[in-house]
Image (cartoon, rainbow, N blue to C red):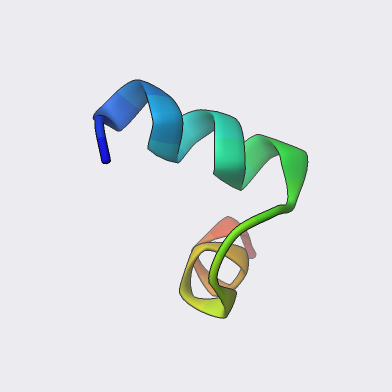
Length: 24
C-alpha cells in the first residue's frame, strides 16, 4: 500500500486495527 493510501485509511478510520492504534 502506498503512503497516500495509508494516510487516507488512517484519517477515515478504516483498515487494520494497527492503523487505528497509530491514530491515537
